[in-house]
Length: 64
Image (tube, rainbow, N blue to C red):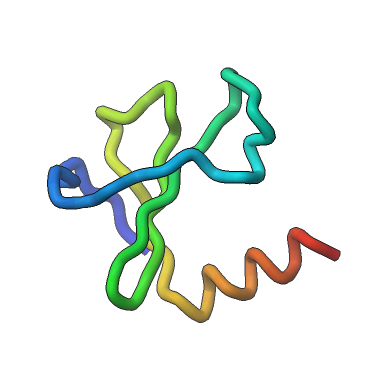
């Protein structure tokens, strides 16, 4: 996992887990072998990248 502010090549979308709210939202972008996540209200802070296996495990755990 790492942070980066160079994300001009990434295409972020609002997470479906944000459920239409305007506060506490996150955005997600697909990477070749990872997912990038950033805070909608603090985009300039960069993003976190999670390897595909970790991202999949997080999504599975959040639906239980």
